[in-house]
Image (cartoon, rainbow, N blue to C red; front, side, top):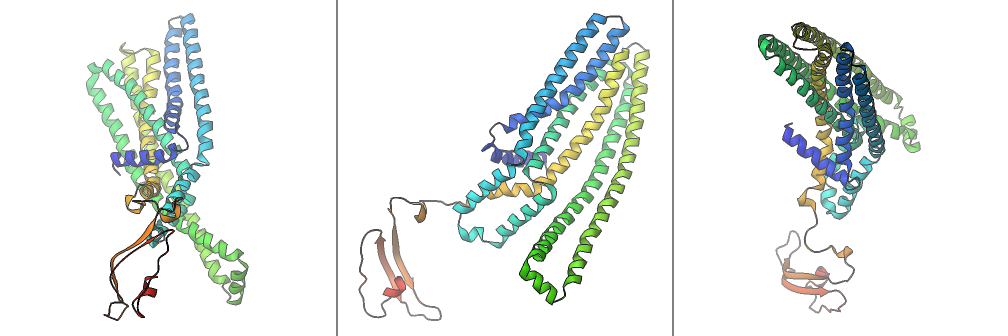
Length: 399
């Protein structure tokens, strides 16, 4: 999914929730900011405190400690406060969206809503929400994605300033950048493999949930239970349950495979971290960096790789859920199923409506003889009208 399409679908889904929660976008961005900022405040504060202590500037170090603690705790408090609201939203966001879908269903043409494709989509969305989560789970993934993006931005600022200070050693810097790009590419490759396998597992889980719900509903029904006992269907149900249980072993295999991939990726990150420390220590020995800056830039470099991987993972999870959640927005924004023109008859309160026949002709199936030919009639509500004609003229057919 392209970024523009991802942004548009996410925006449309959040707009549905704004009907009930008008400030949800600001709350999500603020929470992501409050979650990501304290880590870098503490990282910068520790490096600054270390430099001040080494130069015996104890009073200034105390001030930095005070500012660091107050700012980080204040942001954590604001983040926890907003998070408590969003956790409450998580339990009712699905109901908010479904209420709009239900309202749309009541105001649309029944033949469209009764269409098999429409009903299959509704059931598919319900099954997938049960298997992988609904809009509340999606909001948590978006918050995590925004948190990772803020963290990447902070890390880029620190790393960019480090590169600016170390322009004289550009050759070593290029090697370090190539190693960083290699780690990112390895992470993307591993993520693609695990995501494809994980998506396949979720599809199996969706199918298993549907089968299990059907089996459970059937088994607790008294009439169906009688039929099962009479027709000796116990072995058939046992077969289905064994197939469901076998999928649990597939999840275990996935965990093992994911663990192997992550161990390779973590090993690559360890090599990158060691090279980063060596490079930064080399700059420190030549007087370009202070001791505290070594701690700051080494931590920023490692967090940059970590949060870039986190962004990729969060984006992949969000795209997977958007594949079925965007059906809600497509359904609600579909102009072809909306009622157009005047209000439906049953919704008028003034009884100001009429039935009109304009040049109506009719013949019965398998007959070419017209029963009605170019009939023009108007039935107005509240008026009386008598239909007069010969036998077989079509009076009953009109009624």
